[in-house]
Amino acid sequence: MTAGLVTVLAVLVLLVLLCTGVPVAFALATAGVLGLVVLRGADIASSTLGSLPYQATAEATLVVIPMFILMGVLAAHARVAEDVFRISHRLLRRLPGGLGLASIAACAGFGAVSGSSVATTATVGRVAIVEMRKYGYSVSFAAGIVAAAGTLSVLIPPSIVLVIYGIITGESIGALLTAGIIPGILSALVFMTLVIIRVRLRPAIGGFNQAPAAVDDGPTLAGDRPQGKGYAGLVKIAVLFAIVIGGIYAGFFTATEAASLGALAALLMLLADVFRYGPRQLAVNLKNSFAEAASVTSFIFAILVGASLFTFFLVSAGITNSFANWALDLPVPPAVLIIVLLGIMIPLGMFLDPISIMLIVLPLAYPVVTGLGYDGIWFAILTVKMIEIGLITPPVGLNVYVLAGTPGVRLEDAFRGIAWFLPAELFTTSLLFLVPDLVTWLPSQIG
Image 1 (tube, rainbow, N blue to C red):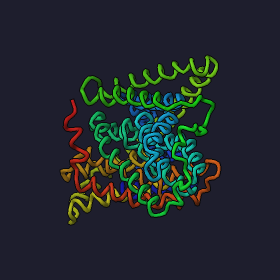
Image 2 (image 1 turned 120 degrees about the vertical axis):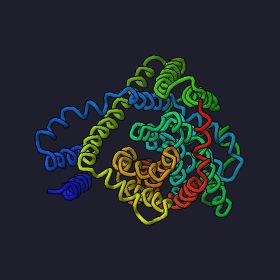
Image 3 (image 1 turned 135 degrees about the vertical axis):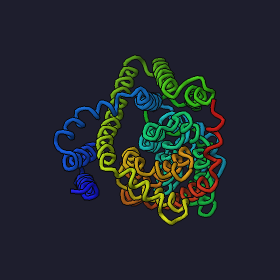
């Protein structure tokens, strides 16, 4: 059987397994091993299965992943998201759609310590949607705001998705994290502009009966934490951002060192909460934080192992080189080819998580992009934007499904609300595509 037919067989097996609900990691591993058995024989497949999982995970740079995850989880249990939401509303409440703007700011702020879109959407959504509904926002509008703004976490550093991109492609992780800052701010501003415009045109959907001093009156936030002005959360985010991104940008730390120091700082911040909650609640928060971090890390590393087996099969079959050579020889403008490669990720994003998408697509797409002379860091940000769009696109937008679990939010409401933000995402992506300096300028200044 030729390499091409074996590849088709492996891809079909992968698709069937994914459609039947098999976890992505096991689907990738099964398709890769099956392809190796047919292509190279059972002995080679067995040898690869015995050695490659260790080789794929035994790299010092991968320490970045659990450290960033732990930092985000510890920050979440320290109620940073609630503090940021409170202070954001205090600052933005006099603008049209103030609570919606505060939700976007809270997602952006918490994304600066979380790195996970789903975690940000769930954490901020639990707080923000209750408050927006309380002050007159329509359910669909409130859900759409949080689902869209939650995607900022995969763009604003420290983004786990950008870290994975750097590990796959060999691009500088520090440069990738720095590259996400300007596009992340730009995306947040576009979302905020859309919210203001919609509330101006239809005041009824955006809190027309909202009290001007709602935050000062003490809105009911999730949990039993004493109410405050939220400045503590703002300080925590500033400290963590300065350690991680400031340290990398100034050249003081490598990405691994910055992630480790960030996790340590987040741990100290959570320990300081002993004065608010007492030692018993602190012990519970610590236990839950480490358990959640271990669970998410295990999930990501399982996907890394499965994807490494599938990618090894593709390389053994010569598919990566053949695809790159075929794509480079196509009689189409390079920009058109880049658009096609990016467009492939949107339907994948409807069904797969961001890390799986990159592990499947990048081994094929990255050599083509760099072979055409484009900047790999620029392509990284565009890839993340495509993943963002996939996270909120029907029929399976992960962020939308996360919000559908919030009391009072139906799935159809969330999808109806998110429809307004898809054109905004396409507009921002087009701007980044046409003006690469928005992405590449800040990394070029890195220490």
